[in-house]
Length: 246
Image (spheres, one colour):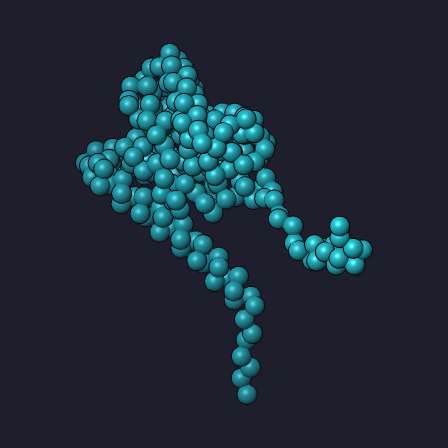
């Protein structure tokens, strides 16, 4: 049994040990969309990232489907995390994600047949997307349902934004159009968004080919790094002491 002196000394030591700080919902959103963007920082999900982004509408459709699956899987895994054995958690995650992807696939096939044809096999390959499994293993399996859902939404939104940016740039320079097929996703009202920006004689076919996807993705990563480097240098310059000329 500890003496009063040992108890007080231990209590004093505990008071000086900083408690583990939990991430706020805002910081989780910022990490998922910008600081730890799955497509630009972690370079996950490159297969659909480069294969489906030949048009903005297809990229947007896959992005929305990925967000739905990520949010649903993270929420369910977070709710069941206390009842899942560590030894079988990965197989259970795969089965759960595969079930959700199948449901989303049937919904897209029933209500958005044109989008289903344009996405093809890549809609089913959401099951193998490392982003969904990574967030389930790294976050949803260790945090509450609200934080897990927000984390999944932020990561999915960050991935969808990269998809849409890639699809827009590649469609504009490769086909000369932008958002063609938007009515298939958003409804007839979105047909007004389908525009032609560049004539066919001034397009570059390489933009909609796989090498073009790598080039545009590299430019987006370089742009993100440049923005972060500029912001970091600007912040550091605030604390520099200006030399005094004698």
